[in-house]
Length: 282
Image: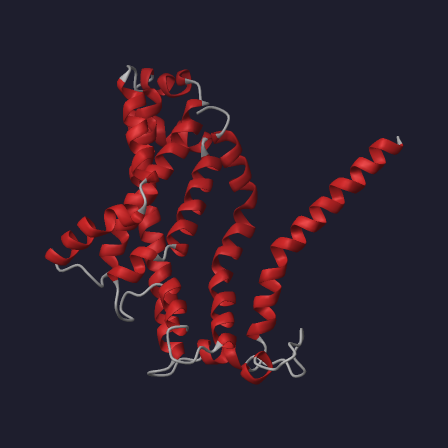
C-alpha cells in the first residue's frame, strides 16, 4: 500500500515537473510580451514588470499602413488560407491513396509505401533548389499557390501513411458488403470507411494544419512581401532590424500560438484516439 502511494506521488511529481518544463518558456514569453522595452533591458533582470502593458498587442492587432501590424495581420491571413488549402487538398488526395495502399494486394505495396515515407523524410534543403527553379520558371514565386503546392508535397505522404495505418484496422468485409449490394467503391469509402476512421481523419487534419502553420524554411525562401508571407516569416522579420523589439516579438509569438492552441483544445480527443488507432498496425 505504501509502495503504491509512493509510486503515485512520484508519478504526479514527475508529471508536474514535466508540465513546468513545458510551460516555463511560454510563461516567460507572455511576461516579455506585457513588458516595456525599458523593463526588458533593465539590469538586474526583473521577473515581473512593474507596469504590465498591452501596448505590444495593440501594435500588432490595430491595423495601420507601413507598421508591424500590417505585416502581421496579412501574415495571419496568409497562413490561415495556405494551411487550410494545403490541408484540404492533401487530405482529399490522401484518402484514396491510403485506401489503395491498405487494400492493394501484392508485394509492390511495401515498396510504394517506403517511397511515400522516404519523400516525407527528405530534408527540405534537398528539394528547395529544384522547387525554386520550377516555381521561378512558372512565375509562381511569392504566391499562395506556390506554398500550397510545396506544403502538399510534405503533408500528402504524412496523411497517407497515417490514414493507411488506420484503414488497415478496418475489416475489408465492411467495405465489400455495400459493394455487393450495388454501391460503388467511392460510396463505400464515403459512407462506411470514413465514418469509422473519423478519429484518424481528424488527427491527420490537425497535424497537417500544424505542420503547415509552423513551416518556416519554404516560406522564407519563396515569399518576399506581405502578399504571401506566412506568420513564421513575419515574426522573423520583426527580429531582422538593427534593434529588435523583444516585447513585440514575444507578443507576436503568443498571438501566433493562439489558433493552433484553440484547434488542439477542440480536437485533443480526436488527436489522441486517431494517433493511437493508427499506431496499432503499421
